[in-house]
Length: 234
Image 1 (cartoon, rainbow, N blue to C red):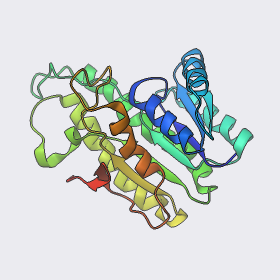
Image 2: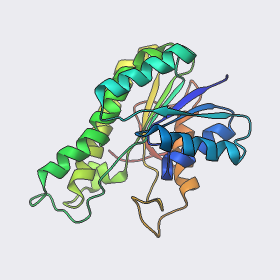
Image 3: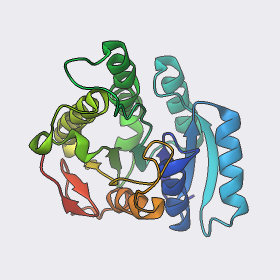
């Protein structure tokens, strides 16, 4: 079955393209979504388009649901016994209408459930399966909006949760390093998706940087923040 890769939020946009590119590299891709119907439709579409060499299979996984994440990990354990690549892609709330001092904190809390706690609980649930892999990789899809270097007062829910995700990336890299798990954060850039809106870079270009981190050699970096394979400032 080759490399087994799981992508959260894989049914559309950037996640869908990441699934495509991993499948083209021969991976068995577990395309996950909050709805099994949505995941199944997206997986069938990719297989119908001829995902050369790989296979795309749907997986029910809502990153905000503790029990659901644990159940998904159990299904992967039962079928594969390991996980080689975990791409934490699911994210919400690019809140361009908000500023830090006037932000609706309920919006911030909701964003944190998906953008921070989602990858956190997913990493916890799948850590044992990553440790069972010979060449494990974790990629947290972040954003330069979470870089403290250039941060201002806009998009507070999105920026703060992505900054926190970057911090989590550093912690997970340190904790999982002795097990050979390479953990990195990747900014795909401004991508023309439903969240990013029109005018961004092509989705395949944004996904390529994520796939680069997902397919690093064992000598590759860990605990870093990258776009297009080049380091970004924290």
